[in-house]
Length: 621
Image (cartoon, rainbow, N blue to C red; front, side, top):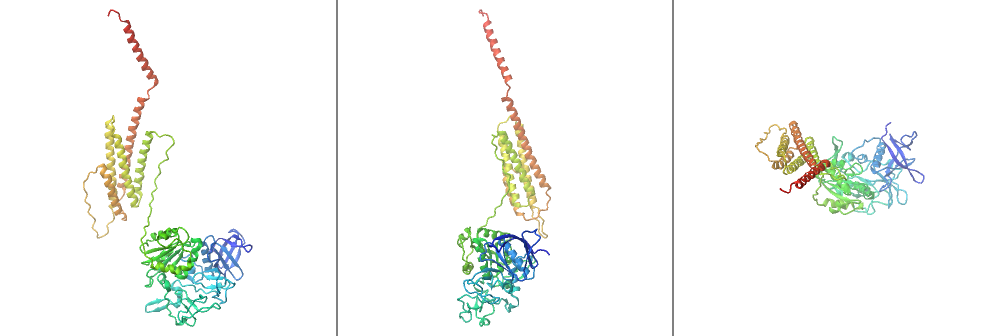
């Protein structure tokens, strides 16, 4: 038999309540565990009459308890998502069905209760056996959504009547009239607050001595058992009705397996709630439960268990809806990024309930620096309904990867080596941006590379021209270099024209007259053509970025290769001239010492000969 779920969990031992790591396997309705996955002998836990509950109110350590008639197993998961996955899997085998990993938690759509262990400050009664919970603090299990109370031994026998989420969960209690379908009250018996008053007779109701009288889970109305039939059947959904998606609105599933929500007239701007359960020292768990009690559980999502995508998919059919993010700035950024991906920014307005630290955005928007009182939730929802909207700029950063220049060496660099580095840098830049223009499908990259290419070639030609303005011995070389620079400019213009032609080449729709383009014979000068061509290229690429190109790219490839060849020729010519100049200067400066000494000896001998001739001349002359 295949395992429904398996993995490592911490198990609390009976001795000194220490934690030990064990490997668990869930197969059918039996849970197996051993020291590791390769163990031959596994302990077994029968889940036939078992219930599962979170271990505490805040549940900082992500622990949960498996309660059977014969034993109690306390386990701890690595994080909250892992814990909820295990609880969902264990619940699925209890209900005799195996639910695959779905878009929403299984318990939200199955009517099953979500138990957690808690204590109560006043006498509380079990909704299963109707007896009081044990101990002075009435310790027992409570459903985090509907507040159904139960002994740990009774939880397995509790009926699956948790708060409704969809039309199917209401069942045959649905109300049909001339206005369409409507939702009845969903009553829960007993455990009313001390100050409770009947909505029909306005007398005190409820009791601390027994389980009696009723409370609606949606509108919070409380009535006596005798007055219950006198109260109107339709539920008005209470003070949060503007924010609630009624279960009747969730009535179908789309082809992708996601629930589709239809917007009823009473719900013009529903509220989608995202809670980061880890924020505020796990205060998020308390807010998560409180929101599920006040709203439809299907519209409340834990960011730590699936992220924001599923909730936004549920709400994407609404023309207008509100989002409340309970967490820090990181949680808000996560939700905003997902809104951008689904293009819902025109439909959604977002509010922030600050939890934990890092709440600068919440302070700016007027929601304060932190909120840690979950009992104030009705007032918070009321403020959110009256809140005004402001536009928020959201910036996206585009980054490009470029090769960083090599680190300067410690040794001094000669002027010749510096020139060679500059020349090779120009050549590498031209080749890199040509490759981007030819290979990229993004018009923004093509425009950027074309502009940089134009600037690079312009700078390169200017640098070469400045070098050849100096008086040179060989005028022919200067003329040849000027011709090559002119050819380079012409080839750049041809490349840009080819880009312009390709960008305009788009398939024509039937019945549309093709545009007539007038060609003007125009001679481009080297300076003007570069700047004008950049603007034209940016225009033509941005206009036709979404159109599919069909013209072959051979001409564009030829132009690019021709431009690279022209740059290479100029570089080779410049290197040749530099080499010749260096060779000539070396001949003049580096004369050999032997030749120099010979010249000195010859000049001295000539001086001696002149002196002797003057002495030997006769005195009579």
